[in-house]
Image (tube, rainbow, N blue to C red; front, side, top):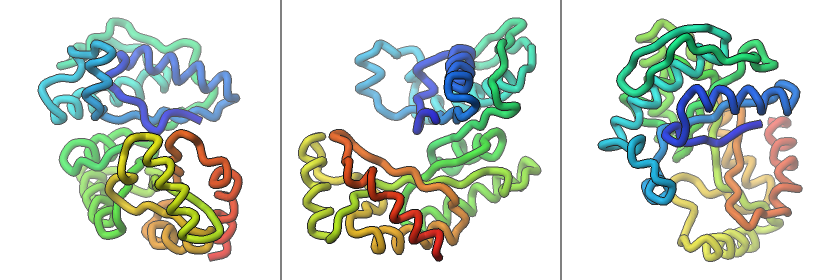
Length: 243
């Protein structure tokens, strides 16, 4: 239970750790801290987050790296002081601790030089999206970063997200998807696979990613939320479990 993913630039990591801890207690130990470097400039302008938007995406990813390092230490119960490029902490402690002994951090994003390096250093889970060959290439880069920091990549849960619409036919699914695109003022779901069709075809499209090692699929559902897809996504899971 958590964000997929939250913008690191919105909060100081001390506050983020407190919020994640609260969610872990409220949910009985089910929280996952999903976090990324942030990309939506208009939202930052609207909320006045000028200081954290920085000089560009590279700076925001440097900020993410420092923040996730601090989050891991706070969530693990360490008391410490820190003087960094972006953050300062003095005798910092996150108390009470989360319910989980090790509250998982999920990093979303696929930047080959910085995001995947941060993932290799600190993440318990990684989320990406894209076409199969693109995702396979990203995974190879993550392997390289893990080797560089001496980490076994199998320690990182691989998760992938798709926009999915389930109907009895491809035509009906595509029509439902088009309605949602129009509602949100966009023409399509963006880059990467858009899975629209009956459960067996959706499962067949996901299977090659499972074979790469992705154990978790996160469904992207824009408003208005598609109740039929929500009710039928379990059919896809059943088909994938059957192999």
